[in-house]
Length: 377
Image (cartoon, rainbow, N blue to C red; front, side):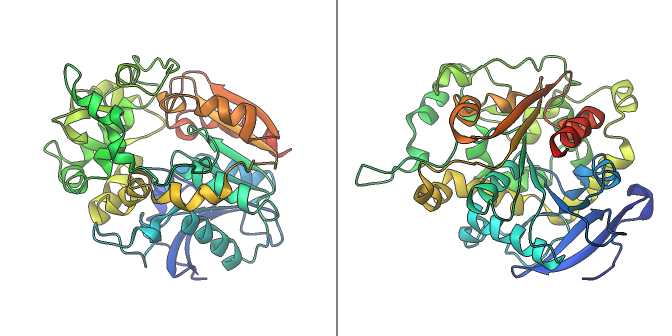
């Protein structure tokens, strides 16, 4: 383990340090807290897209103060973690969810932990955490999912062929709407997405500020409703950061939702200095490493690999946390209900934090930390 400090001290709260470990062929950049005392139980925090370990800066010290060794890695393809092929031309198996679980197991071992008191996943970190808890309940003793409910593995395939997700008729129907629309996950899987997002016309800082704002509780029109079915007509209710206008990339989709200067100054959960950390990292790396995760879903790789788990449940104690203004909870019809009623057999609660949007652990860290600590006991 290398005790290096790649982040300037001014952007890391006192008590959080930056280090590197070797794990599963990667040189993994990790933020950790509670590292001063040996033998503490571990809590591992997995970020989503477009984020990095820094997304947990508001949560790590509260968990450390409660007696935990807190580990938050830059996951494969993100931030200062190196060793993966982050180009579009890559072996997608490297970014498949089962290999991402292997990364987490190796990171724990690199820190000398045989188990984790909890694994916590936000956004695209949630399915990684869920599969980890499902596959290795002996290692991951409890599970917290944030923003993204987990519906369980796919059913056993009875047909002779596994249909290509890209042939889903709903994708065609979205193109027939007025105005024509497209699903963001298939846009993220396209060859053009990284270039468009890495060099947006408004500049990377304004793009990322608008993206974070538009999906947050600060954008007052984020008032989610349940989707009744997987159809173009229902999906059209989703904001344009999920169901995009067909002829726009993501930077153009969020450009009209740039917060005002007064809104930026009053944004306590993402100051200009904090936003600058994300901007600096993505200016250096681009987005393709994280976008390759989406390709594993849109190309059907994750579905093919995890179908062997059909019918399996998550039986460790579990918790779900989301903002009550987060459309991600409902963007896939039935996912929340499947998680609550069937998949998580030991679900201890679903907390919807008032006024928060997609970035719940940043927007309202006090309520998020309280829910986490109450769950961890």
